[in-house]
Length: 378
Image (cartoon, rainbow, N blue to C red; front, side):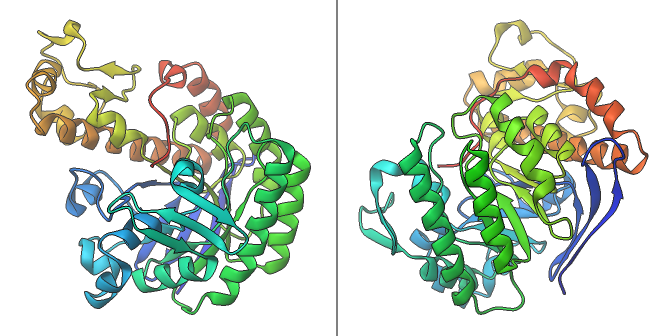
């Protein structure tokens, strides 16, 4: 039912390509997961997700528990049937909301008390409750509840976050009831290598099917993130999937792949797409800029997506200026296609034995200098 195998490796970096098998299908790795926080990637249908190359989707436990509620989803036949997406799904546990909704929550050893963003009521998300919700949602891969501290957290805060992450990981493991779902652990510890190592070793002792790195891209400079990944990525169990949570700049994904990471998620392609920011082979295109008013060329001449094959930059700019909803949809589609093609190019480079050369070239490209909006969901 479940399996993971790295079939090809790079001889000069830790990059690897392989396959993840789930009850709802195969996923090529390294893989990128679009974010469907509330059970939908904004403005994009399940069919369109398939057409741009998506193989696995991410949804969020916290938001789905608030609305429509996991029991309704379970009654209607699981998240796959409810959303119309029949491929693999991963659900985050709600741990990132500990960071992103810090003004709307109370935290102690039992779990997190959230003030609902929907109606102001309180949701007590314990490790056991997070697993119960995810068991009901029926995703293929589910995550332990963890504490994601901000990059600027002091040493006592970071120690507390790691302690609770480990405590909750064990409780999540004990509460998990479905053999048709893989439960992944999450390594925390900020930019402290010793804390990261301690957290990793204790999680390895619990023998989870997969391991994620959390708590990066939360305010730290990219070089510090890359420093942590360079030693932590290869230290994760080699026989199991490695997942870097919420990191989405193309250059950061490429650097993480070089460190042996297999899975990624990010709101960046769709959030930026909705704001008229397109990722292209020639660098970023900001469609609200007046320079594109008469631009009769495609968004990216090197791109084979639906948007680039049918529409000009001038038309796309018009859609944003006129506040037509088609604009955000078309640019989101393009950005998702760009990301999936980007992952495919890296997989091919690993399999053909030229990933290190490809990475050096990409580091010098205009795309590597992009600084779009933030990575994570709310």
